[in-house]
Image (cartoon, rainbow, N blue to C red; front, side, top):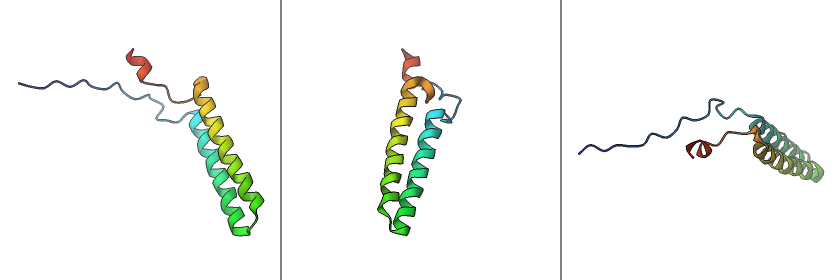
Length: 79
């Protein structure tokens, strides 16, 4: 007896290139560069600012995603 499988819906066409994703990515990279610069120079202020930039980028990315500027959910389309 042949088995039948349900095919999942296709992914969104934007390939994850959204405002929320770019904001999160650039913020985390900038924060990591600041933390690394602080480690090399031995200045804790750069590390603290870098960690703050990364935390702010995470909050901004999640906020933009909830505001509709992120990847569209495929679960909503199934309903």
